[in-house]
Image (cartoon, rainbow, N blue to C red; front, side, top):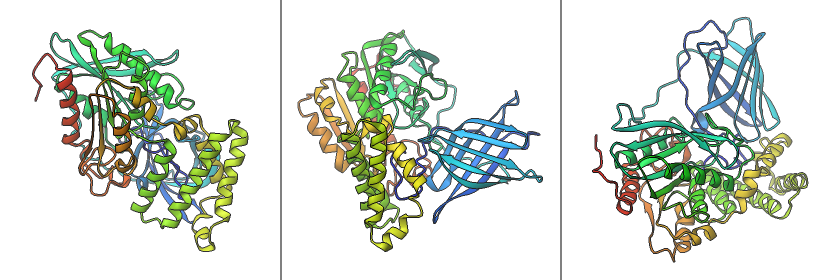
Length: 485
């Protein structure tokens, strides 16, 4: 999984990274430009950068960067500037906002940062120049040797999902793949940290003769619907709607249409396939093989270790997560669950040795506790924590390819690979592989730590791209030779 995980005992800024934006154009609006400030929470400090741009009609838009978390291009959902006050909102767990008043110089803002109802003062200063441009050599560029069509279809509810369908040229019929993204609100390219993995993957597969449908999550970008109240089961409904749409599209082989899901999408794929005969294959890219709480605790332990966090603090973090998850499992009433989850966190803090308590008390304020409880008590988390993907995997009879990155710290292969293989033991065409040297995004990585993702120029390893394309084409041969141009 990506950034849904609770960041305990670090600052509770579980930012969900979904998009990138252009540098600001010249404008007379004093709000336009790059603004940077430091958010202080207890002993911790976190730099945040806002990039505000102006459209031709005068409306404002922008993105947010959190360099220390390797997060860039987090879309601002609203931006307004009226009577000297700049107000912005952004999609993070529990909701996020910033509001500040510009000074007489026009180069400083005095304001407040808010997430999940927890507010902290934060002042911003104007930064000269545009944000640095990140090199992404794999990002596709036209002209394309295939057809590109903007499409929409009805999702799992009464709303439209928007996407892009890329289809090889020729009479067909072509096999097809629906791409399903990982956790957090994702656009059709699964844009994160300056990378567009699904665009790179779709381009590669379509050049191999495989049609690809990728779409914005419900409530994200051009798609309708409400992301905030959805669970993994709801995303499986959306994936099945995408499968039905793709199978009915012109020049598509309806008997060769499947799901390629990354991270949480690796849970969605088998779940959808276990519920519909229309899904003809499943590719799991870093798909968990155990319950969500087990993934969350192990993910936290490994990432904390990579960041140099003391083992005792990592263990403390795991105890809090496990205790809160047990409340979720046993208490259905949300208000009562929130009370008990808060109590779990406070008891763990009070039970720490004095030297360890001093390390976390500044971060785990009452406001921070409430923010973490709100996140873990959400509909998505309540479903994810105790969902076991193995029963759905056991019911899948179509071909399955499950790939893991050897250096993945978010869905560790040592925890999930064997579990997936065991669950698929009765499937006659199931392959589980751990690809050497790759991280959660299937980049070639040194350590696998999330802090590396943005710094790596590569978006997706050719090894992973090739393995997915070859596996699908072997089982559902396209009616043409692969396109190498």
